[in-house]
Length: 125
View 1 (cartoon, helix red, strand yellow):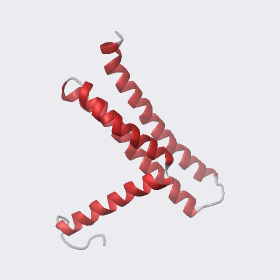
View 2: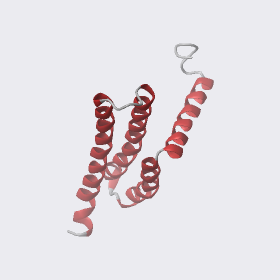
View 3: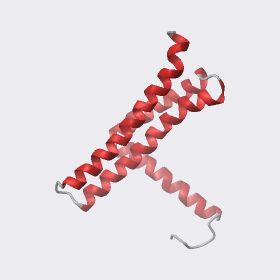
């Protein structure tokens, strides 16, 4: 329950971890986009850690990939809430869904941009 108990209680931390894992499982089970992006993450994170020179390059290659997964989950949450509250079409509901999708798209552009700016000169320049 929110606001009950000591915030650093190991049991509360364990419950929060379990809820997070439940959210990841739900994303995997119900969202094809999340599954695709998760599979790409499994490939791109180790490659980014391998090809990145220094900590900043590694972060610039890995962070946007992980952010895509995070925002995809938030987008899916927005879509689920909108569908639950208003199953019929409404302009604002459509706008909320489109904006969530746009946020994921912008992060995918960031992934391509980050990888391109770092790797293009190294391998093709």
